[in-house]
Length: 202
Image 1: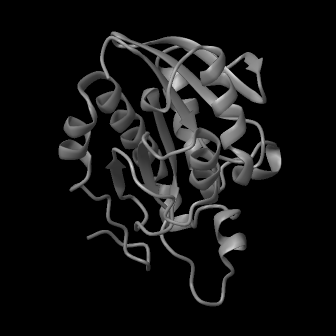
Image 2: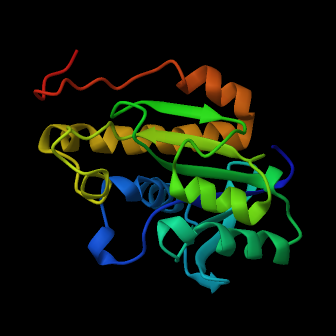
């Protein structure tokens, strides 16, 4: 992906009500990347807030769709069309219940896996040929609804590792942007930040 313009889309829900929830981990990592590389997310266009700058030698747009999660796709599609980019320029970072908390998995392309934000992107872009960085949030207990779980805050035992998890998400993004997807997969797909359900560490 070097020597091209990359679009990094963090997925989440807009508004203070949803800040720091599991579903907004994509927003959280993007904000961290924005601070680290001094790329303010202050511009607004097509229902996104975004900024443009450089991550190492890579020219990037960082953007957060301001529709709700299940309507993430149209704002991203409109922005890349305006700047004459394609879905192959896009890296998406988002939450994933199919991965345990602390796991990161990078994929070059694929289906939605049931994730409404990814499905919306695929519908709007006409395909799934974009890179995904999946941030594991674990699966809810049977007594908790999926909606309540993803819109809830991280548990206390998870919160103690959250800063490290966010940092690793940012590092995964930088690796993909600057060294390529395969390098990112080799570096991050096999690693795990493992936290036992009782709060202990393996």
